[in-house]
Image (tube, rainbow, N blue to C red; front, side, top):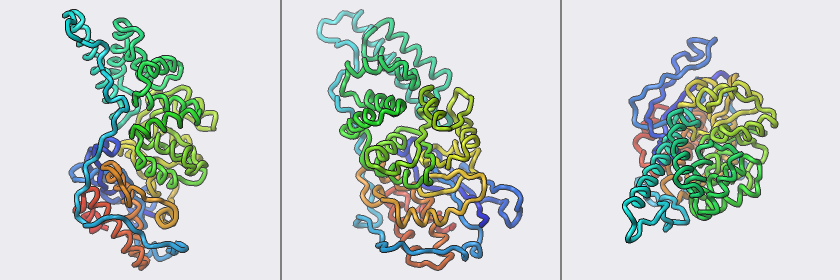
Length: 439
């Protein structure tokens, strides 16, 4: 069945993996009715209110939909969620904190009687530390690259050199050196030394878990991930959402993740909770590591020659590995999708990559009615979880159109009800209604 590609609007915020740029997604103008020889295209308009993390594959006409067999889920019960009033506001989020909340972040205590030289040195070290953190954060929040820019790398390297000269053996000298290495596993002794100096620091736990994920040491990785869960750095809601990401991936497929929550959450859900062990996880972030690249090549993946992991890298990776049943987490910034948007099809919480047309209705119908747990929709515990629930909307609106065309009013009413509920808890109810009316 020939299909038309849509990208449409869904709710997003700063808590949702840093996606803050708003966009409107228009339906294609070169549909099969007007051009049967070219792939669908998308017009992006940057003037609308809601951000997008999703592309949508929907049948072109009602006639196309008439051939679809809408099957009832065996023993399926009506979808239920907790909530009192449809229009109640979402509760504010509680930020995750390090365990060691009382730990001093300066290298030296400027206690009573400290000399002006000591005070000046301490202030300088604090300044360099802040500069490193700012450069690293700017790199991590880039929407088009996981690799730091040349300037960001230079600034981090300068901070590393400063501490190696002025405070050798300090936490900063070891931790910054490892982080600036962009997952260079040869620098693990520095990470271990940083842990010995601050064993309860959750930033160290993030890096330690990542190191063991790269080294394919599952037991050790889970030790540090459990520490992250204890400190609420990795929340149960994120893990539950990541479980549904994994369930969305194709059988024996590859799931490409982008940042901390989707990469670490999916790893934990798969290796601790036993969700979809058939799926191979590929982290764009970890692809900066030579060790990680070697692991993937040993599994039969072909990798781009570029040293920079960015939007072009993902595009080439998909072309080189089209036989690997690729899917990409929706939490990846939209910029990564623009070059390959005509090959992406919504399947649950991922985009499946297909070079040929793909009928995704049966897949989405099965995922929604038989597979997904939907925890962040039914029982969200913080604001991030409520915002993550918006990523179910692409699938729901796709199903809404299909159910309406096939006359399955029971399922149509359910997805309408759930879509409204998501709109309320994301505080974007009116925007969701606007999108629904255009469908």
